[in-house]
Length: 126
Image (cartoon, rainbow, N blue to C red; front, side, top):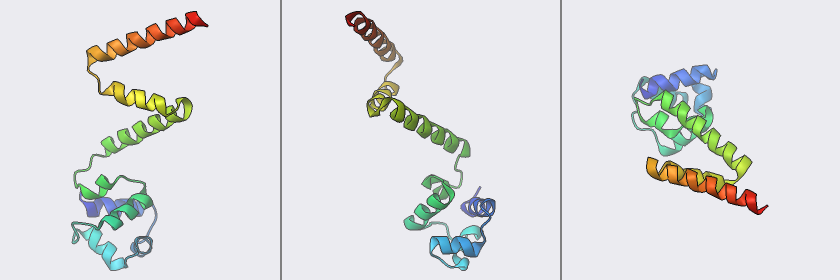
């Protein structure tokens, strides 16, 4: 879908008129009409930022015509998981996870074995 089509869809889903969206963006209704009709291909960075805030989307949604909505859902889910891990286990757990996902399979197995060994040692010391 094109930027204009996506923007119009989001606007209607949110129940906004072109004039109301324009007010939120700090532009006139005519500018929103141009965005939706495809007359404007490259939005200003400040406009993209405001659109992201209004519609709770990532900037790429408004930059790429072929934006993958499934990818967006996956990213939102991953961010949710990371926030949950950070809240429940601290930033150190997130840091460990970030390192872990970059490892190859062999090194992931080594990390798991090392963590298991450390857990056993810790339980014996207590």
